[in-house]
Image (cartoon, rainbow, N blue to C red; front, side):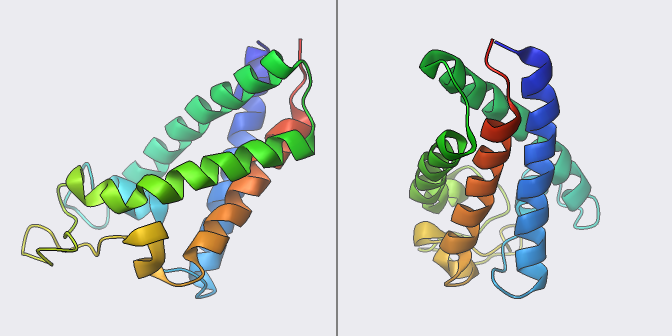
Length: 157
């Protein structure tokens, strides 16, 4: 495995993915802020949560970059379209399990119980649709970009 490439291009791909998600939120395409959702898992402080969440998100980006790199190495090549295909699979997994997030998130309401003083965040719901009908499309676009960046720039050894 090409560890320097996985680290460098994993960072670049995570910046691209996170930027696309946050620009989409700012444009009103989705109400989900992944750094905020992740950060509130670790702190109730709403000002610190996005910073902590961004750190967690970048760690996840590196972990997934190694997974993508392993896939590229096992195939014996990397390209933007292979990376994009992996990004589509990655999105399918994320959207399939996101509805279960309230089960592990200490500050997120559930679909059944609703908000309480200690669980004020809205649950994402099926495919993340509680954060907007375009959330699945935004997630797909962001993960396609993540995979395409990694696939285009990673060098198989």
